[in-house]
Amino acid sequence: MEAVEIGAARPDELDAMLGLMCESFGLPFASAREVFYSDPYFEIENKRVLRVNGRLISCLTLVDTVCWLGAGQARVAGIAGVATVPEWRRRGYAGLLLSETVRELARRGYALSALFPYAYGYYRKFGWELAGFAHRFLTAPANLPSYPEAQRVRLAHADDIPALERLYNAAARGKTFHCLRDTKRWRYLFEHVRQRVVYSPDKVQVEGYLLYDFRTVGGESGANAPGVVQPLSLRILEMVAANEAARRGLIGFLASQDGVGCLEYAATWADLEANGLLQTVAPGIETKDALASVEIVPSLMARVIDLARVAEALRPNWAGFYATLALVMRDPLVETGAQAVIVTGAGLDDPQVSMARAEALPPVADSIVGDVGAWSQVVVGHLSGAEACALGLLQPSTPRARALVAQLFPRRTPFLPVPDHF
Image (cartoon, rainbow, N blue to C red; front, side):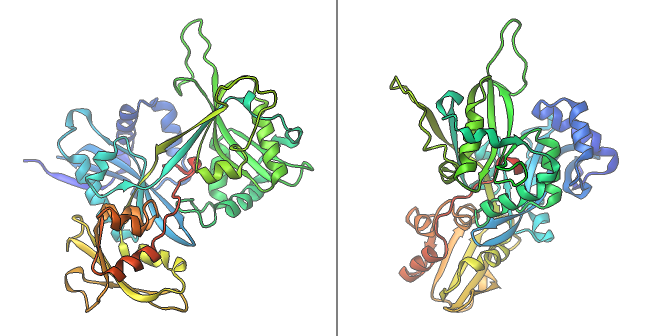
């Protein structure tokens, strides 16, 4: 008879856990081990495992962060490194680990969970749902203008961290799923992102920055076939500019990358536009060939962990709300099968949020009901409340309830920047 146990990894299991992840994701154990144990955010309680008869079978890692939800902030648990021993796969063990993790996250006080899936359909079974797109911009350096401001771009160094913090905070504020980064996080990024430059008009002030890396076309390993040299691809991880001069400087720097075959940047459409990449026009156009392409690709998945905590995080977005509306979320991983909150606003300050029992709501004329997948898309703004009702994903009790949920939940642009990926 199988004895299944789920909990934090023991210290003597960490190498086995790392070995399982390396085997599953094709990573070299030696170099991964150095990163694994030197991670400044390492907490053994966030290394979750499932054991069968004492043997480690499945694992995952939790990443603790706080993200913007419009004008509010929510505690989010990233999930990474989900893996199962090959001969034990397709027996439901990873699903058991994920289900128990959702309950554990609720006990720890998280509002949301997010992950980048290998298969969207798999995680959808456990309540995660698509919560954002990325616009992947592709062009060649020769297609960008060689602005003279590129001369004011220099290598970034540790003394620039406060300036980068300030620039990022100004750019990220209010953008859904952009993480809050402290100085510790920026120091971590400086250690792990080796390619980084800043725009500095006087070699002291910093008005923009660029984080990037290099990959070989067709793969990330950097290995080439004998006698064949693959062109490099420059992947922009993050680009932030405070003014037009900084935008031109960073674009000019990218245009100067002669040894690069392709520039790639996954961002929101608004960020591509704000950074000037969508308005660049290379001089001397002689053909009708495309100068750049933009692909829309699915990005992260999100899951509501605690509807009341999500509603509390969203309150700063709801100032002036004047009504009472019950939100009911069906969730099979909750003991009662559902969560419910009541939003009550008097039209002045932020409305009040109170928990309720879904099976015994007080007399409320206006309510909205949906399952956890639908609510996960709506609360982050991947779908608006109006769209979710039109698609039948949310069921309003009255026409007024439909109007109220449209008021509370507009469309947003949820996007988790690449430097913060789990």
